[in-house]
Image 1 (cartoon, rainbow, N blue to C red):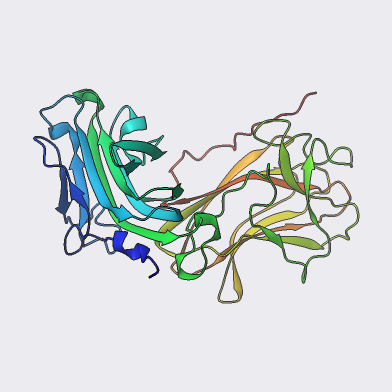
Image 2 (tube, rainbow, N blue to C red; image 1 turned 90 degrees about the vertical axis):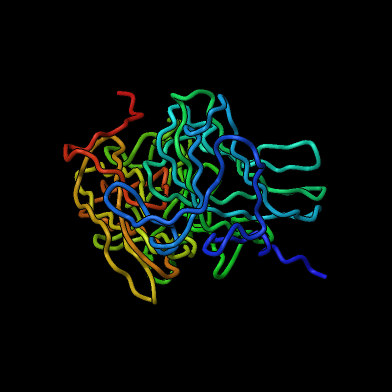
Length: 348
C-alpha cells in the first residue's frame, strides 16, 4: 500500500497527533491558546486556536534541549516538510530551533533557523530524503540562561516529493525567491503581451549610460534585464512568478531594481489572481546609478502570481533591471522613511 504522509500532519487543535516529547525535567512543549494582541500572535491557523510553545528559559538545566518527535517515516522516499514557527528572545539564534532526521541512535540536522523571526509566524519548507525509516525531530536548545527564549510551532504538514515541485493545493508558499544565478527559478515571460524580452545578463548592458554594470549581490553574478534598444516607447515586458499559495496573513515581497538612464520608463509590480492584475507598486523615471531595494506588502488568501512589468521610456537609454527577489511570510519590517539607500557595484 502507498504510504500516506499526512500521518505527520498536525495543527495541534485537539492534541499532539502522532508527535511525542521526551519526558525530562525542565522545559517542554506545551499546547497553548492565547488571544492575539499587539504584543503577541495567536495560533497560525485562526489566531484563536492552539499551537505548541516551548519556554527554554524556564528550564533549571543549563543547555536543556526540548525535543518534539514525529512518527516513523518509511525509507527510500523524498519528503517535503512544511511548518510555521515563531521565536522570541534568543541571543544565539542558530540553535533556537532546528530540525533533525533521527535514524535509530543517529541523527542528522536538515534545517536550522539562522535569524530572529520578530515574534511573527514564518513558514519554512524543507526537502529531505532518507534511505532508512526515520523520524523528524524538532529541537530547541539554549546554551545559557541569557541565550534562552520561547519557540512556537504550528501547522506541521508533510507531503511526498520535492518542495519546489509540489503542485496544486500543496504549492509551497515561498517559491518566489530568485537571485538569477541558476536561471529564472520558475519565473516565466508573458509572451502574449510582451513586445520585448527579459534577458539574463552578467556584466554591463549593451547600451552606454543606462543599465547596471554588474549584478546586485556579488558584482560578477547574473541579473534580469529589459534591453530597451529593440523596443518602441510604451512597449513593455512582463515576468510572472510560478503560482504561489495563498496565505491568511500578509506577505512581504522584496527585490532590488536598477533604473538608470535619461529615458527610463516605468517598473511596476502586480498581483495576478482570478485572471486579473492588481497594481501593488510602481516607479517611473531615472532613479540612481546604484541598485535600490523595494519592499511590497500584500495579501492574497488564494493561489496567485507576482508580475514584474517593465515599460520602455522615451529613448534607448531606458534599460531596467531586477535582482535578488525574496518572498517572506509575514509583514514587511517597519523602516524609517528616508531616501532609498542603494548598493552599487559600479566602478568609476
